[in-house]
Length: 149
Image (tube, rainbow, N blue to C red; front, side, top):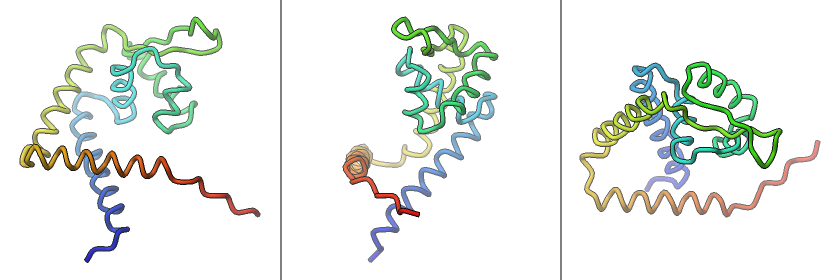
């Protein structure tokens, strides 16, 4: 019988393999993983504040700032002042980002069909439900106290 910790390892390794394989395909479109993550999140939820997006992506705000700088230089993302807070920026996809985002969605659809196409629909739905349960369990974990020096 496999140890429970092996499941966490398998999930992590599978996630890593998925990211690497998709990265190779996205690179053909001239985009990095970090950039396509930003574009995908802004496509789903335009107008996010830069600081909020950094938190959702689990990256430092300065790191996101650099990514957005590059996307802005490429005319793919626009920064707009937040009307509720002059110090904050809201992020939007530019009109010229639409063709690239469409290509990325098509790429993701083909990629998903390749890797999940041999699975039965019920298996996919069961796996999604299990992963959602695992995420909820993780969210419910009590924070670990930091060791004092």
